[in-house]
Amino acid sequence: MTCEQAQPLLSAYLDRELDLSKSLEAEDHLRECKRCAATLQQHEALRSALGAASLAFEPPAGLERRVRKAARHEAKPRVLLARAPWRWAAVPMAATLAAALTWSVSMHREATSGEAVVLNELVSGHVRSLMVDHLVDVATSDQHTVKPWFNGKVDFAPPVADFAASGFPLVGGRVDYIGGRPVAALVYRHDRHLVNVFIWPAGGAPAGQQEFSSQGYHLVRWNDADLEYWAVSDLNARELAVLAALLRQSHP
Image: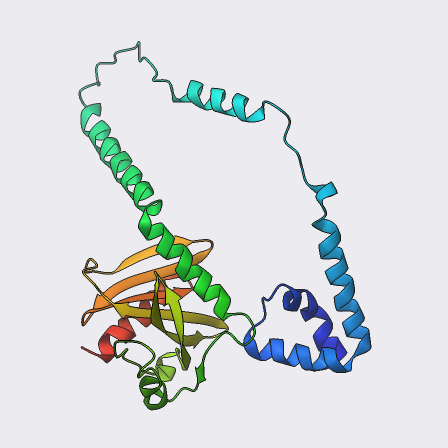
């Protein structure tokens, strides 16, 4: 890696946004290049300065009370004085809106329940894997090497497959820790995006495929052969669903 190639990547390297190979290349270059190393130190100093307590915004006293008061005022029910002749025609629409509101509230409750904790852990596990030396424990696209590697490391046999022909080559696997237990994690690549597929015993989880979004990442969850799967990536939901379909087809 040359200085011209390294300079635009220094901020991303400092923020741990580079993939594994680019991070290693950047580290090798920084060990040899004093100019780029000095630039990185400047970035670090700027970050420290911006994080100084003197720059933190202190909200004025009473702001929370005023916001709560305004919210309560807006939440008060409105009285409809006008009664138009079409009021009965509006009943089906009102029922539809009520059903939609009930669904929305239900989904919001679910997002703040124990499942939200799992979502946060999955996203955290995905982000950790993008850091240097945290992506995989066994780095190979050979499924016959990755699958037996899990023996003795988890108490189940995760199915492993490579989908390079479909645009999702296998990068490798590792053991992660989700929901208070060790789980298998398969890592796939699609273009420049990485996908973590976390697998553990289903344990009575509901069947069917579900899609979620959390912290800017997409997640797809499904059950298959007594195992629960969660695919996590910054890929869009449609492409992530393609990988889910490939995994389901690989072990009917």
